[in-house]
Length: 409
Image 1 (cartoon, rainbow, N blue to C red):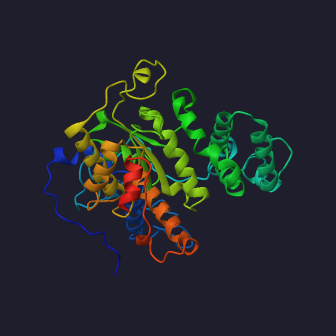
Image 2: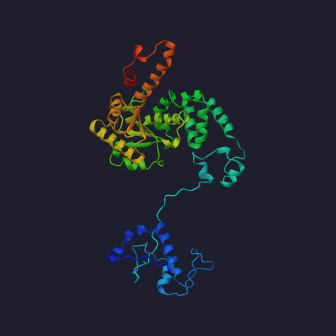
């Protein structure tokens, strides 16, 4: 009726049992099994448990024999790969704790780290109780504002700046410091801030993006990363994305080839998906596929932050995009949407057709604008007296990918 530890024959050689590589099995799981094994051993002794019978508080066994003392201090079948001899009953091994391995943990951030975390920082909106509990006393001025007051402060600063580029950069700085406040400002002042956060201002920001680069709000993949794209995607902390806004920067809002600097459009569009579309910011990821640039001024600019090489084209380009799409599906699932943004006329429609049956993709410049145009035409039917869209005759001004996309839809 007494509990017994399971035993099994061990066919390994002494050399295999003492292999340094086996120390990887040490850790939290091994230590928990140690505790269980020690408790079971102690239960078989007359004074194996402390008063009260709690297995968590092991008393020193009456018998100080070698086997029991070693069992209590760190022997278990779970900790294979040992530095000592095997016991006769085959149940225990001696081990030494390996060097600690950095664990993947979630922890509560407080103090200065909380104020530096844009996702959770509230700035002056922390209450007195929150400042006390989160160790923020003395790290903020004594004043306390509601979020409504904070919105007024932000808008006063924005309206005091005359240059739209400076206004855009100030908003991006707010995004880094206080994400919740940033989106509150965008939601409440959409009409005023839309031309600042997006077109036409974002185009000017992209032209000088190398000078004003502000932080890791996107993922950057280069043509040199072929063969390790999946590993790069794993570096992004969010695992359950719904949308990737992908650009290679070859045709940025009519400004031409801006290379990696075109990521500014993808970042701004991601912000609009949250403020106007309601997507969680953690569900959207801007991605730049940096395959080089043919822009001579950027290639000669010492401050350019992208690859200073000519654009990769042809089969090498397609192989890179194939690996990227496959890696995205493997990392984030088949239902994640890949949006192609600001690709050239040559690649935009071709890539959309290439992956039409392999992944959930769309090109905003082709399908997005076309869908919006068609919606406007349908909504106008009662005003024009027409019953069907086919009753109209359309003239599309411009033969780019956007115009052809509208015509096809």
